[in-house]
Image (cartoon, rainbow, N blue to C red):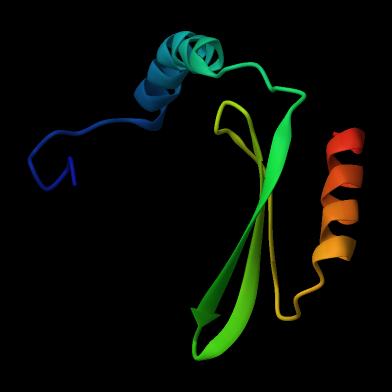
Length: 91
């Protein structure tokens, strides 16, 4: 894309740019993320993917941050809640 516009960029210049600007950007993103809450709830949604019914499960904390996502073909709420709780305790 840049060469098409007549601008020649080397791999070294990209590497230097990434080294200079990626660290401050990562720090800014980490700072903006809220801390995880100890209170969360489980969302359950029925979705159709390519004509097949699936169940979408999301564990969401009190700040609205998605903790875990799972899609499955069969609905088994009790088993999925146990599975999501166990994964939150591990992570």
